Figure 1: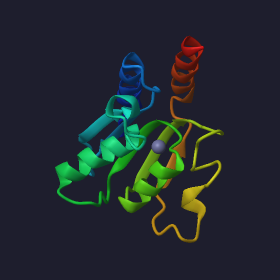
Figure 2: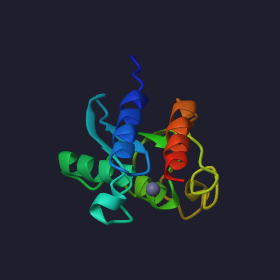
Figure 3: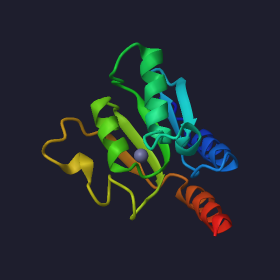
Length: 149
Ligand SMILES: [Zn+2]
């Protein structure tokens, strides 16, 4: 089995989001066969939509591509620990594997705060791998918020 990290593409989406004035978070969805079916960065400001997180946009696009509201066997790569909303969407979509970069003690909902996947009400918990290219994701966020001050 050959393994490809899709975090570089997720980081490129995060960088593109920063260039648009959005919080730099990027996400990539990979189908069971290994092909990238969706990639997205945050667009909450552009869409005037608080739900337009990178993960949600990628899940929506991948579901349209799959013709299904569920994405079994798919892997999601995200530069930052998903928030509770996105974690719930990941669970609802039945995504098999979640890879994320930086942890987010303030807004995260996987290893922090709501810990969505740890609830008994959570019907589907993906395999989770954290800390992938975390430093690069963190640097992007830090420089973005520094520039805004
Ligand atoms: Zn989110």
